[in-house]
Image (cartoon, rainbow, N blue to C red):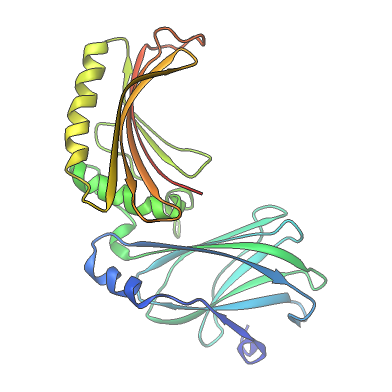
Length: 281
C-alpha cells in the first residue's frame, strides 16, 4: 500500500464545521452522509490492487465510522489506510454488490478510504458513511429513559448502522431498559416492545406512563402528533409521535398502543405497546 497515495486523485469528504463543533458539545453525536458516484475507466488502476478511488477522512482518536458501498455493477471491497499508506483495515465484499467496513480510528489525523474493484470494473455506486464519537458507541444498560431516548434518537440519524455492524468486534447493540423485545427492522428502524399480553388496563397504563416520559424528551425542534384510536385491517392503534422539523429526511419517534383483539390474523396476545425510532428515506 505504501506509495499508492502519490498515484491517488483524492476525493475529499467535506465535514461541516458546525458538525465538528457539535461533537464537542453533545455527549452523543452521530453523523450520516450519503452520495452516489461512478467508477470509470478513467480511475486509477494498480497491479494486484485493482481499479480504485480514494476518499480522505479526517478523524480524532477514538472516533468510529461505518462505511457502506453498494454497486449493482461490480463487486466492491474497502481498504482503510493511514496518511502514510499503511493499511489499518480491509474487508472484501460482503456479497457481489456490497462492502461494509467499520473501524475505530487509533489516532488523530487524516485517513484514506479506498473503494477497490476488479481492474475491469466500472459502474455506479452508492456510498453511505456514518461517524460517531467514543461516547456514542455504547450506553449503560440501566440508563434512564430520557438518556436512552437521546441516545437512540441520535443513532436514528444513521439508520442504526452501528447497531447492525459492530465496530471492531464490540457489541454496540443497545436494549432499552424494561423493554421485553428489541429489533432492528429492515427499513433501518429500531423497535422496542414494552408490553405484549391480554390485559388492556396494563397496556393502557404503560402507554400513558411512557407517553408522559416521552413528552419530556423533545423540544420545539420536534413536532408532536397524537391520535385516538384508529382502525386498519381490524387492528386498532393509538399513538403519540414526535417528528423532526425542517428536515428533508426527518427522524421520527413513535409510541403506539395496539389492540389486536378483533384482528383477522391470529395473534398470541391481544394488546401491545411499542416504541419505534426511525428516519425517513
